[in-house]
Length: 242
Image (cartoon, rainbow, N blue to C red; front, side, top):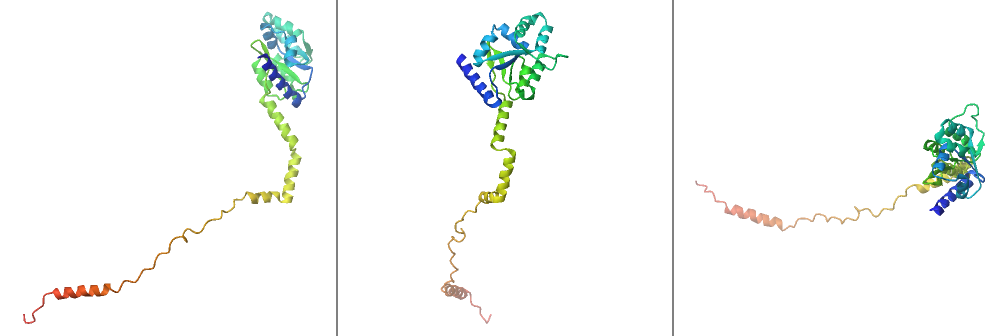
């Protein structure tokens, strides 16, 4: 199981390295929920995370995350101690601190130029992170750290970039212009036109010619005359003297 997880992690890291310039040392921003889950599941983040990502890792957080943990009291005291061990990156909320999730989301704004990873158990924050291209996401499942697969937003961004590299907009316009000049479009239109199928002979011409009406035989006339004559002979004769 461990080998399979590392294979998936290696594949995902390769995706971010080649398409978004992610490189070592991997900078991982952790929030209070991730620290609390690590404490609960007895996960040594500093030891296990570099092994899992197979490279050097810089664990860091923000002042807003630590202040949020302090405000939550004794229940998250252990998570606060863990977060305080990490590097504290400066954010834009020194004067007016915000929630940890809002702070981390602002740290990966503007195309995540610092190539941060986000480590969180907050589902709402994870959903928002997935809507940004090029931000790797880490979370804890069943006592293990898991690197999430690239989000659909990241995959769509890479596909769009590759499509523009193959055929930039100005190049597409030039290709269409050349086609019009050379008459390629007209040739293709002529080729795509449906050809008339060569029909067979007219089915009406294949019909057998009807025989002309043959003249009635002349023998019928004398037979009819004979019949008429016989009928006349059978008629009773009229006595003129009556």
